[in-house]
Image 1 (tube, rainbow, N blue to C red):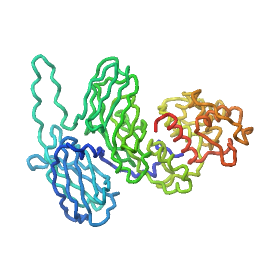
Image 2 (tube, helix red, strand yellow):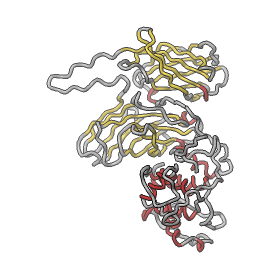
Image 3 (spheres, rainbow, N blue to C red):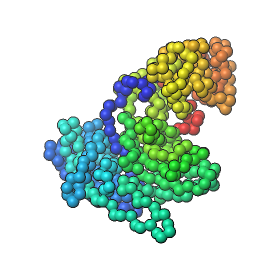
Length: 487
C-alpha cells in the first residue's frame, strides 16, 4: 500500500495552494448581511469572454469574497488563480497571491467563495472595489480582487472597575459564544452551521467557548489534493475537555464535484507540525453535515479529497471503501490516477495502515527488536508504534519481514489485537478450509470475522495463507473505521 508518509507522492500535484472555502449556506440564508458587489471586468488578454451572470460580492460578516460568472465557453479550472489587492484611499498597500482555486458549478454558473486573508497588519477590509478576470503568467485564469482596507476604530474604554475585553482581531469573526460548566452544554451558530455538544464532566469549572468561522490568517490552506468546505476555530482559553465533545459542521456539497460524500473528513490543524490530520467524519447527506468527536479544542476544517482513480472499475465492491479511506487521508495511489487494486500489500504497509486508522501516534524515536526494520525506513515509526502497543510481535524475536506480502491470517491477527475482547467471536466452521488456519491465527480470524471485517470467498474458503490485495485491505480498514464509529 502506498501511504502519504512515503517520500514519493506521484499522485499528488505538487505546489497546489488552496485558500479555505467557507460553507455557503450561511451567506445566502435569509437575514444574511447585505453584500458589497461589483461586476467582473475582463482584464487584458482575458480568456473568459464572460456573458450572463457576472458579479462579485464581499460579505462583511463572514469576510468572504464570492465570484459568480457564466463563461461563453467551458473552462478548465485546473489552472485558475486568485489574487487579493488591498488598497487604502485608492493606494495599493499590498498584494497576496492566494494561488490555485476551485470553482463549483451551479446550474451552469461558476461560483467561487474564498476567505479574505493576508491584509496588512492592523487593517481590515471595508469594501469590494473591483474584480478583473485575466491571465496568470500564461498558465491559466487569474481573478484579481481589489479590496479597500482601513484601520479599525479604537476599542471602547473598559467600564470602571471592570477588566474590559480586548478588541477583537480584525481578521477573525466570532460567530457563537457560550459558557459551559461541569454540567456540559451546547455552543451553536444561529444557523447551526457549527454545533459543539460538550458532555457532562468534560470541564471541572465554567469556561467560555467560542466558535470562530475561519480564524484567518492562522487557518492554513488544505494539503495538496484536498479542497476545504469549512473551517472553524474552537477556543476555550486553553482549557481542554477531559471527555470528547461532539461537533457537527455543515458543508457545501458542491465542493465534492460529483464525488462520494465519503471523501469528506473533519481534520485538525497541528500548529507544531504545520499539518492537517484526520479526526473522523460521519456524514449525513440529508442535511449536508459531518460529525466528529473532538478530544481537544483547536482549529478544524472539513476537507474533501479530490484524487481520481481510473482503475477501480474492475473492483466495484471496493470503490466505496477506497472513497472512505481517501476521506480519511489513509491511502493514496501507486501513480497518478492508479490505485492498483489487485496489487499485493506488504506487512509494513498494512501495519502503517492500521496504526493510522486507529489513531496511534508514530514513534519516531522508538526502537524495536527487529533487525530488518531500519530506523531510517519510512515505515519504522509505525512499526515501532504497533510494537509498543502490542499489535505486532514479528515473525521471530528479531525479524519483522516488512517487505513480505501480508497473508490474510496475518491481517486477521492484527485486526484481532486491535479489536480485543470487544468483538464477538465468529465461527470458523463456515469455512471449508478452516483446518488450514494456523493455531496462532485462529483467535484473530474469529475476531475479524465476528466483527464483520473479514469474510470468506464465494467458494466457501477463507484462504488464510493467500496474500491480501490492496482492494481487499481497503475494504477491511474502511470496515474497521466504521466499527470504531469514526465514519
